[in-house]
Length: 209
Image: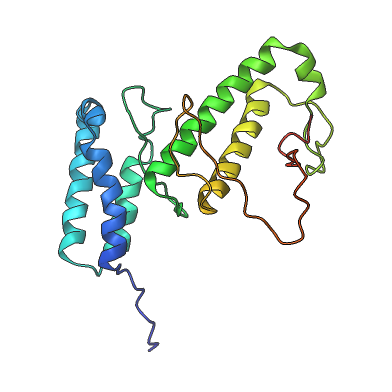
C-alpha cells in the first residue's frame, strides 16, 4: 500500500480573514442589497456563501475547498453583467491580485473611463482608425490597424491598468480615483547619474500611433 500524502486544504486565520473580509464587504454593501435579493437562485447562492463562511470560521482544515466554492457562487456578479450592482464581486478564480480592494476598484474604474473615451475618439475620427496600429511586439499583427474601436480602446485601458498598478506599487500614487482633483502622482525617484533635463515621457503606451 502506498502512503499517499493527503492534500493540505487548510488556510491560516490571517489569509482566511483577509479573503472573507472582501466577500463580506460585497455582501454588506447597501448598493448591492437589491441585487442579492432579486431572484431565488441568487438568494440561495448568498445563503450558501454565508454557510461556507461560517464553516470556515469554525475550522481551518477545509478552508481552501470552502473558498473555491464561495468564488464559484459569485463569479458572475459583476457590474458589467448586472446593472443593479454598485461594486463587482471582489475576487475571481485564479491568482488573486495583491492590490488592496479599494485600489483594484479605482484601477478598474479608471480603465473603464479610459476605454469609453478612446472608443469615442476612434469612432469620431476616421484618421485615427488608419494611423493607430497594433504594436510590433505582436509578431503576427504588428503594423496593421486595429479591427474596431473596442479593440483599440481595450489596449489603452490595459496600458493604464499596468501603469497605475506600477505607480501604486512604487508608492507614487495613493490608489484614489479622483478625475476632478487629479491623481497627484509623485515624480520617480532620482537615479544617480541620470540626466535630469529629460522632460518627455518615453513610455511605449502610444508607440503604436
